[in-house]
Length: 246
Ligand code: OAD
Image (cartoon, rainbow, N blue to C red):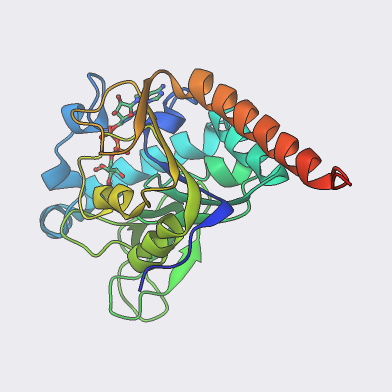
């Protein structure tokens, strides 16, 4: 059974584009990571098996970039929505810019680069912040440590939880994602017909059904949208407070 739609619940589903203006590269734009590097070599269990040092080096560099980046106006605007809404951020990003902007509920479906984890089934994770992970650095269970990020061919994290958040949201904002990596991209379809749905991105091959597409930089469109939603919420709560007419 589908969960009930909660008008006050707002779900943000973000991708690399929301962090682009913080200086972090996206994956598929002209200067994207997967244009310069091969995802098969850097982001798959096969690549790890073949050359784990190259994979560690790649993510060590990305960990430092992510650590040094600062939240931008889009991250901050998303955090500000908590003043009036129950906000859940579902992100494909492995950086922590949403948390650092002040968002209190962030679900990372593709992992977090500031963590390492073992390679055995115990999957114990450790916070490493910006420190490199090196070959020979072992988990307590004796297995080699690797970045706690999801690679192609691996299971996405918290998918069902993410789906149920989107299905119960009264508003859904999708921002900075090409919606080309599955199964996560299909989350947008879990949003309900009566939810207000907006997609902010510079480019998307086919905007999903029912979403209004705003072709814009995240730092421009997201603060404007957040201001509108906050103003509407204030207006609604003022109307509720007015005394009933005699
Ligand atoms: P992509 O690189 O595929 O898409 C980024 C999207 O952001 C594109 O649609 C851009 O047009 C848009 N964009 C770029 N700059 C923007 C800006 N300033 N404001 C708004 N939009 C902007 O990145 P993702 O969709 O996040 O997975 O990629 C999904 C997954 O593919 C990643 O999580 C990663 C990658 O392989 C794993 O590593 C498992």
